[in-house]
Image 1 (cartoon, one colour):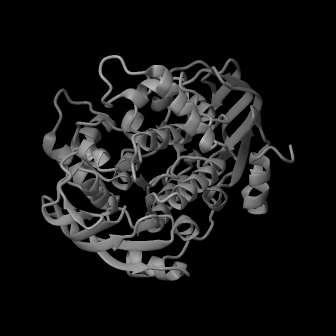
Image 2 (cartoon, one colour):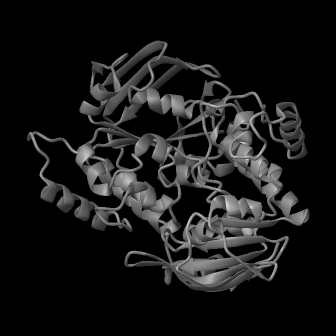
Length: 487
């Protein structure tokens, strides 16, 4: 399906999110949409899928002007979108998520739908069981589920908004293979991202956005420096690798064992020094999340002990860990980290300690405005959190961290952030390391893990490696361990 945007404009108050957008996406191509956080990429895609209505301009599908008033309209016209945060119902089964919102009467043919799911899963080499509960799936598997559902609904245009955030390298390879196969079958794929290497690897053409405007379209062969300059209007240098790790251990894990319904980790021994950054590498679902939740008291070990500053914290609750200076930033922003329906100001009120009976609204707004400026959040104190872009939600989550923390635990800390923002965020994190704050984080980006870690733990099949010096390892060596080789 051919898509044309003509003079699309979209405002949010004083913010001109899409400023006179004009370009065409040919049928059967993989179109890259590249830009910094808040450049207008996701806004334009939400206009195309009926989540937002353009204030002016027209959309043409196969040279025919259309009005897309809702996501249901978009799907009926053959347009489906895979969002940054999965739009599914975790407590329900895969097959029920398939059936939700479809027109099949009160008693749909579940056996036929089950066969359809199995057939599509086999066609794209996915391991999706129709009777599995969605809450048991990894982020990558939930993404695969949504792709299958959209294909089952008959979409001819598939939009993916930052789809590789939070999935493993193997899942990314499988996703890319799937998209290439779909494009070869005549589907139009729109790939929205800020990751240059992914756009260069996958896309047959790229449109670059900056501050709500389309600044240019690029065809292969691609030039990374050209992309960076188009996105930011300047060159961006990767920060120097720096360490503030002391030789003073603050956290000590002795013979820790963890388990849940699908995984067991045994006999983990580790000392985390003041100011140290430890990266966790591995395929998603290999135990990194269990490890982080154990360190913050959200999960109790089934064996071993946790010592913080010489004090035994084994079996203590999350609030006790918080009072000891531990903070946790989960990957699921809107499900676990932030509260939809609440404003930025209300989030900062909840995040700070209060000793008065009533909240001082002026102080709260002043604090929010300070954090908005400090973290370059594109929003106002009155902005509801779900109205922010994914990258700005991530900035807000990081801005909620209190001062003088002893340990920060992060899942995919630069998720949804462009290159410049990621470098800036890590500079802020490293400043905390100077003050003896330790950081443990997980990321699907091995370059990020090597760049910002002092030591690295690799997780595979219930095993946890001994700490690896980040200065002496390579992406290839980590990839071998993540794939099960060299243990």
